[in-house]
Length: 195
Image (cartoon, rainbow, N blue to C red):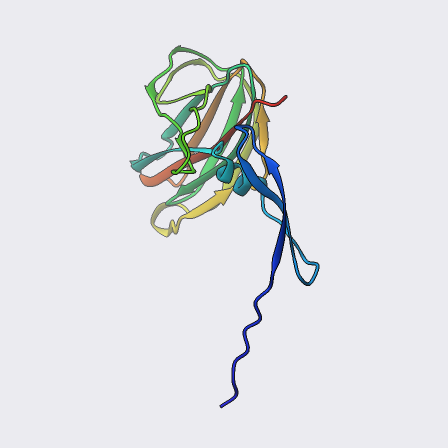
């Protein structure tokens, strides 16, 4: 039987500071000269400034909607949206939404559970009372089937968007499957307090 050889690679780091003056490695290079990289979201989670929020309906009626209202503050709000549904669904994002009642609070969760960073200043609620949707700025269809042939699906928008400061946004998921289906709308959120 051939012996297995495991090579241990020494890694060198260059350190920097996050927005809370905590030291963290920003660049890692191994002994072979390979550069180790990570995603912005992973870095934000490490820094304790990445938040997540989601809303689930176990049986969203045909043509029913999940509405999330995001009220930004004085900062740009970086967003990454995803949805899951038991059949066909449509995700729409509106800007300049007006409402008579904001709905039920849905506090975003800091995704670094060991970090004590302040919470987001943006406010997220579900089931708001909308008086005007606003301007449709983005939409995407998620195929998952209809009626008895619905198999479900998931959709990650895979592209970050940046919501403007001091603006109201409506995230709307609509069940298009023709029957009640489980549906979830999720957002990853990060406030850019540096710009």
